[in-house]
Figure 1: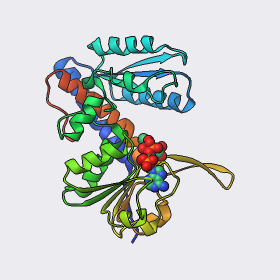
Figure 2: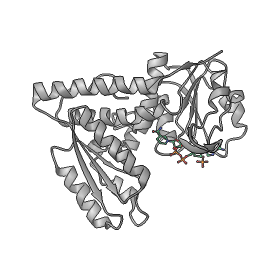
Figure 3: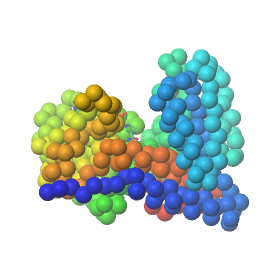
Figure 4: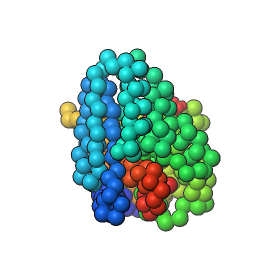
Length: 296
Ligand code: NDP
């Protein structure tokens, strides 16, 4: 079998177009413009690239983008004051504090100071609790993007066996909650899981969020399964820099029914979902109906 490639780049473009159309309607019918504030502390090169991309995508869909770049030595008190002022600003519907923060700043405290209704990353403890209890919440962008691709590919997910490899708070755990919400039978695997290959082989849906290059190989994949590769690993091969996932693409694609590539799979969906969350936050804040198909 050769797997169908789930094209995250094309799907993300569709989501962004849907968001842009909704944003245009909000402007026309309500005189409203969703706004996203991104806070970057320090000079981390990868974070700078992410923030630049987020700004460009936000503007492209017609939203207001507010960038706050602060020096690495910014005090916790100053950062908390900025977050509180963004909480109070009615033109800001989404707030994202780019992680990782410099070591002297308490990330949990900062994230939990964001108004949960504006927490478009879905990391605030209230949103984690709401998601865990099946209530309306802000859902972390990467797992939301994975869920959208899975729903698009499968239609209904109910009854499917899903295995999520990785139990981080930003990907693995919320991914598992979302799949449970769609009535999958969910297993979460991690570094202490016994016989990972056997566990993975039971999966109709296999999500890899490990951070280890090409760790999931074809012999761990059930024939016909859908494989979602969240991993982004920079490696060097044949003297060249290369981006690979947590899944060994060639061997997995030979067995799977469908698979996301790296790059061009989950990655582009993450920013698209950030825009979708900002739009959802704006609609909720104004008592308007939420955009269809863009939330969990
Ligand atoms: P973390 O490092 O926070 O979590 C990794 C998880 O993998 C842990 O739960 C860990 O288990 C588990 N793990 C590690 N080694 C093994 C192993 N040998 N067998 C089974 N499980 C193992 O990573 P993240 O969740 O933040 O990210 C995962 C990947 O996704 C990374 O490559 C990251 O770059 C990528 N990513 C991509 C995004 C995108 O937009 N596409 C967004 C966010 C992340 P344990 O808990 O036991 O230590």
